[in-house]
Amino acid sequence: MTWWKVLGLAGAAGVVATGVVVVRAERRRRAYTPDEVREQLHARFAQAVVAAETAETSEPESRGARLRAWARRVFRR
Image (cartoon, rainbow, N blue to C red):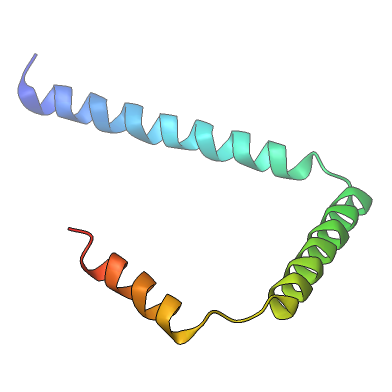
């Protein structure tokens, strides 16, 4: 077999494998009912609201702490 035939077969196999992955993902996505999707979205939103409220109520870092954190990130190498 010549190299171009092998390359063509490998390309065809890649296309088929990609199609299989896409079909599986689509089946998994469609397995949820609209009510289940709505419940999941409401739960995520509630978590986001709690996280935002927690972030707002925590006291802000001092300027020195922010400067030290920045210096650690910059000079980490």
